[in-house]
Length: 427
Image (cartoon, rainbow, N blue to C red; front, side):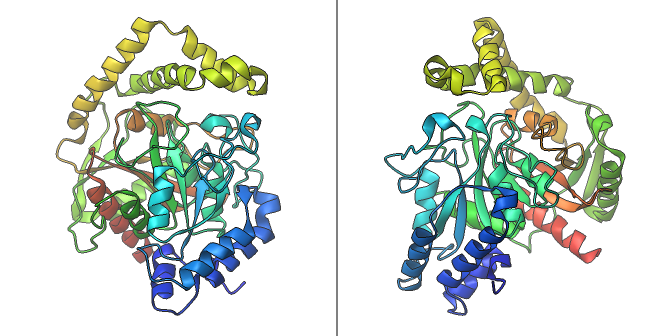
């Protein structure tokens, strides 16, 4: 390997446009890295080296198509690809080949990206751990459900990857693997062609090595989108939200978050200790109710006809969803709608909130980790960004979660970039 696989996406795209490197050389380095470590990390569900190199050679011999021309991207195996199998993390769909690409994959191809392969997802993007391991420590989970996407970016196998989030499946694995994870506002990016779990919660997200790369790929995924990142923008007022779950954060993570908070200077607004919404802690259960009710419907064919192929944990989630009364589900949806209005009280005069991405370092491989610190923000349809801020006592990554108001993606991305620069300057 010549190290091209370690390039950030925007650097690689620029070098390809300037004819300093070829897409073929970049893709080959990524494939070589995969060959070196895939047997330990298990990030990929499907790879076709020859097809990936063919895509790269085509990019090298044709005019630049878009912002990601020649840059390889990994696709979570919950997302349809017409030229590759899509198994949704289940043996039920072994060898399944969709008729066409998901809308997000079409957008990437239009932007000139090379679709490198399919990254591992947990079973139907639920909580049953997959084979994927955390590249920082193979005895630890990479998180889930976008396990392979987070691990592949963290391990230098690919500069960008797509994931999805219904509870915490982008932010949590990004935090555990020490990469940037971006979950935009609900319905900001198309989910057409993605295996549905919950029509009220499912959100397409991205994994990258920094916020600039996250902004780049998100710009390509949203039609008629303008660039999200402007490094000249003045930092937005930031609040520190401790909230009702702060006591579940480990002490080393608290200390790192507090240290960063102290470095924000004039951009600091307020520390939010209490819950001005008065029901924030209860919203985690509301998210779970809606998710399970929706999963019982979206996975009904698999449950009714292939139940023996489902893990016990997934069957229990679906059964719980089936047993929920209609009134309870309607009440949960009403509470969620009300909370999306009341969340304005939480922000107050802040444009951004800093809060934990997870309770601490990645736990063992018997779990994908607790999505407690992500579920409510998903329920509220707010954009979230996980930014690595250092390493905990076991040498594993620690991150913060930055949250903005709905559809304020540019504010969020620019705030994340500003925080990255503060962290870099403090080294």
